Image 1 (cartoon, rainbow, N blue to C red):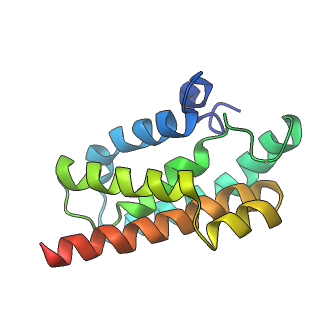
Image 2: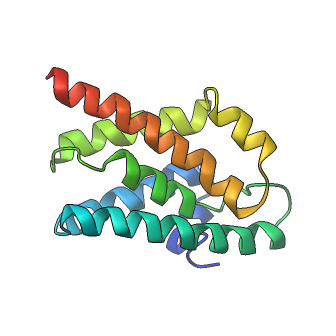
Amino acid sequence: MLLAFGFGSGLSPKAPGTAGSLLALLCMPILTYLPVWAYWCMLVLAFGAGVVICNYADRRLTGHDHPGIVWDEFVGLWLALASVPASWGWWLAGFLVFRCFDIFKPWPISVIDRKIAGGFGVMLDDLIAGCGAWLVTMTLVWLL
């Protein structure tokens, strides 16, 4: 449950998803030391572990995708920031775009959130939000 609740960040009384994403953001200076191939391997492993971790937590808590489960925010944000220039400005931009995708859940994120249950569903909607945020952020990188 410690990982599912993002090392306690998911216990925030207000905006636990944002609190989890902020803690994930604070990991970025360390993650930039990984070679690109290792970063992507870490993402795949974090997603796979997240399916198991979030499934375990989801079965023990009331309702689907309990707000305190924030491991999915960690993985989604790390995906959103993959290949983004390693600077706090770009990381904060990616963070804000990711939070918009995660909070407002545009199509197809909203459909996935409603239709796919268990740990895979918990993880998948944030993975798609991370993909959308990555596309927007990398477009900004390219334009600027």
